[in-house]
Image (cartoon, rainbow, N blue to C red; front, side, top):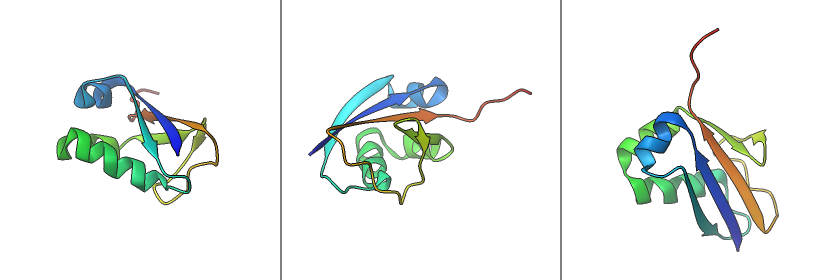
Length: 85
């Protein structure tokens, strides 16, 4: 099992109702598996907010089909779009 720590920022944190949460997934799980668990936990509106976020896994940009790194703990940051210039 892999421990996944998910950190949310700005609007997606408000949508989730938490700024951080932890879950467990099987080794070899893809980011899409984590997303499915989170949407089931927080609902479809949260899923729409999460869909526009950049998802960083251990500091690197991942897409939903990427397999999580082989590690005991993985950190995911959900970063909503930033405005400004």
